[in-house]
Length: 606
Image (cartoon, rainbow, N blue to C red):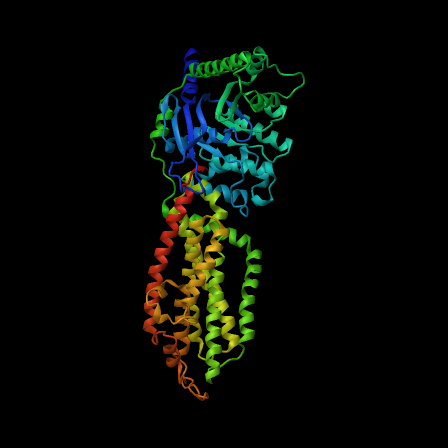
């Protein structure tokens, strides 16, 4: 019997985890809008100062403090999800760990819902599990443990606030972490849903032996009772840490007793939010009380560290294991599948956008209806129809992608930061998704104009014009991605695009003599599409009646029209343009990818 007890105790110790953080300081660089004429460097601002603490398996910790006090910064720094200048050390069972090792042992649940809302709960968790290399049996078990079975096939957008929080929590529990960091898990929930979420977290901590650390604002008395420990944060510093059951007696001993019938959470919250009493220079009693609190804080940490008996074999095995996520091609396939599901679920919105998009093609068709190249006056009309068709198509394709990356940046930063997939796989899947979309919309748009204007040059000409517009459209989308990734804002992208696309439009060949711009014209996707469409159309046009008198130049056939616009006259010109388009497409996408990586790896946390 004694042997069995000793074995059970040894197994328990092997599973125990002690998390410590020592002298954590987080600094961010402040920036001046105007640096001239001063040349003084900008000073770094400390948003977390010399934070020290410790928690162990079975603890459910409440991190409390005023808004802007540094609660989330502390959580991100301890979980090593902070992308800033962090000094100090984080230890697990007395061993300093790297950021990669911390991610293997912990999960981070953000404050806001970060998921594709059109997916069902099962689809979302299956996607996460496949990327993290988790078996589907584990996914099934997590769904059952969090009581998500009743909404398993419900879209995330149709879930209640509490159910969405549990879905975020489920995504982190798939890898069975020893530590969970939850940023304000009760924000936006009613009291019943908030208590349900906290009971789930308490069960994970107490029954499953995990470390759960939560930032929280104004917990109700029932929610406060769920916590085993509290950490009070004040102006970027840890004011106090201790056991929840012992805190009331301690603060009563320094003349800060808990009022009768008062919510303990409100009482402790007031202690760290009363900024009017920060100046202790004239109050010796207040200064002594502050000193006692600091001593008690250090003693509580030391007591927690000394009472934990932990083993090393299991932890060492996890930290030294060669954890493998899905390969790059699998990541690409899963990302494509998720985006296709999202597109199918939002088909109604896409149809509405397409109807508005095609309205301009109908307008062009009405303006240039039934024009044939039988006279000199018709040449200008056909030129205008071709160029206007190209401009409207490319403008639309380029402008419709400005919202993509700014809208998905929070999700992208989180999933890439957690190493669910590589950023290159994400960008590649976005670029690949634009190919069928650009070809479908270009062929449909050009087809409407081609049919209504009645270009009488055959079906092969339509295929050629639509193809060159599609490829040029891909370049327009690439430029849209580049501007979006450079600015990180849809509004700024539009402002920059108004200037850049205008310049590129002038180089299209209708407004300026492109012979004066022999090199710069090749940067314009309007030029590629306009020249290609013109070559495909005008090279098939034979005799044109010269009905003009005076000094007006007579363009006798399609080749003369092409030469008048300084365009090429053979298909070899178009084929050469295709090569340039392909090269420029790769270069612009690569620059966009580098710009996106700068935003994803920016300062902050995910």
